[in-house]
Length: 302
Image (cartoon, rainbow, N blue to C red):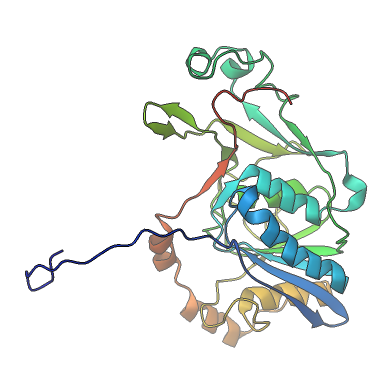
């Protein structure tokens, strides 16, 4: 290796494995007679990695008998669809079990069985494999966490599987968004192996039970389709601090069923703390995707 002064030095590099913890923190916040579960879910990692970490948080929520939930997805760029479904099934009301969660829509050629490249790569594929009927997911309630309101904290870094979770719950319960316009990515993909590489391209669009996927421009809190309030990311406070602007607004809404008024001081503070341009540059290389975990040779209807 070369130092800044142009001299060379040698060092040993050790290979190690690092396990990602997608749940940065979780806690119970008691406020105004409400027990609010708060979880920072930072990445929709594979179910093998994420499920135990999610369960740890929701087991504590179930034990505490929380009344409401805040899911902090402000920096979550997405990941595995199956993990999104698992989280959604923990949040959705029990009475929704068996009803439609979402449907994946592929293009007309795939739906008509016109996919010679995929057949060459994967072998025989059932003719209706890409039909909407085959790709409909239904709710299956997990655990006994029943909440009145669920609030999602979002920013421009909130994308794909994060937005999928929000969109799938919107027709079924009181969902409110706090933060900034999300990324806008209602599409997903599975890997297409080409030689030594996997090709990931937009392959399907997801729609909720109301047949909506209208968030290509992003989910804007407080807009017609996405109830909530615009709040800037407060970089002066840590995750879970009830005084952090986004969380504070969510907690106020939960306890008062109305939105926190914007004072002159608060507006000035938010203007000072707003760092949209910097955040976008820092976030530019982060993964933003919705991965359907299909493997070569595993095309079946089971």
